[in-house]
Image (cartoon, rainbow, N blue to C red; front, side, top):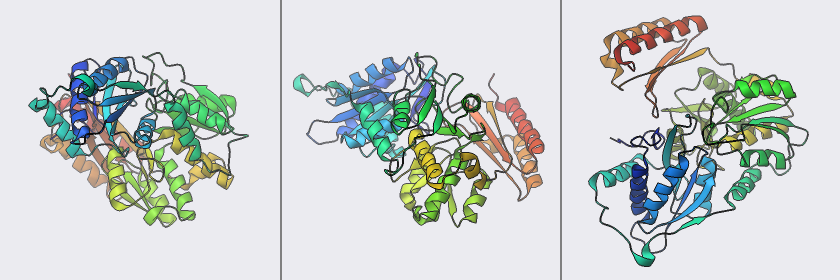
Length: 452
C-alpha cells in the first residue's frame, strides 16, 4: 500500500507533512536514484511548476535532492503539467517532475513524476520511491566533485510547448473570425494559452492571467465556469474556455453561456473521430463518474465505452493496455493519445474547436449529441477513510436508494484520492428525488466519520 502517493502524486498543505521541503528533497533523491539506474552517462530530470507561492520552496528542495544524487536538473519554470510531460520526452530526459496541486487552493501543493516517455509513474515505481525514503538505503550515497549534479534553466520551454500545441491543430484551418473567452485560472497556462489561440488567429478575451502566488484557482478557472459563462454573454463570444491551475483539464461553455463539461466534449470529439474512422476500436475510455448519457450517445453512433476507476492515470492505463486513443473524465481531463501522454486542457480545447470549424457548427448545436441523465454530486469532509460497508446505517440507506432507482439510475460512493472527502454521486430520472437521497447519505456519513 502506498502511503505518500495518492492518485495524482504526493499532495497536501504546503509546509505541512508530507508536503515539506524536507520531504521534497527526499523525493528528489529517491527519484534521481531510481531514474539514474546503473547507466554511467549524465542523467537529467525536468522540473516545472504552476504559480503557487510554495512552488519556489519545493522546487529548490527538489533541485537540491536531485543534484545531490549526481543528476542534472532542467528547470522550465511555470508551465502546464502536459507541457512538462512533453518537454521531458522531447528533450530525452530521464524523468519529469511537476510541482502543482492542480485545481486545489493555493495553500496546497503537490509533486508528481513522469517517466522518460512522458507517462505518469505506475504504482510499483511510486512504491519503490516510498520504500527508498522509508529505508534510508540511499542516505550514505553522496557523489562528490564533478559527480554532483548541476541545474540549468530552459529558457525556451514555453515556446517549444506553444509550437507543439499549434501543430496539433489541422494545418488547413485557423481560428480567424472566432472570439474566445479564455480563463487561465491564474495558473501555469497564463502565458502559453493566450499565445496559442491568438497565434492561430482568434480574438481572445483573457481572464485569470495575473498570478500573484495566492490567487491560483481563486474564484476562477474550470471549477468556477460561471466566470466564463458571464464573460461569453458580455463579449458575445463564440466559446468560453476555462483551464485549471496546471491546465491539464478544461471546461467550456457555448455561445449562450451554457456549461459544456468533459462528458459532452468527449461525446462530440469521439463522434467526430468515429465519422472519420480515427477512433481506435470505436471505443472511448471514461471513468465510472461519467454520465450514463455519454454511454447512450456513443451507442447511437456505433461506438462503445470502457469504464475505469476515477483518475486520469487509470484512464491512460486502460487506453495503453487496450489500444485506444481517446479517453477522459467528466471533470475535463481528456487524453488524446495520438498527440500527448496525459490530460491537456489546451489541446482538448483545440480539438473541440477543430470539430466546430470542420462541421461549421456552433458549440450549442454540437452539444445536443448528448442528453445527460440528471446527476447529483454531494461531497462531505471526513476524518478517516474507512470501509463504507462497515457503517451499517449508511450501507442500508444506499441499498434502499439503489432499490428505488432500479435500472433507471445508479449510486456511486468513493473517497477522493487527493482530499479528505467522500463523494456521493447519484443519477436518476428525478433531480429533486436524487438530490434529497444524496444529502441524506452525506448526512449519515457526517454523523459517523465527519470531520470534527
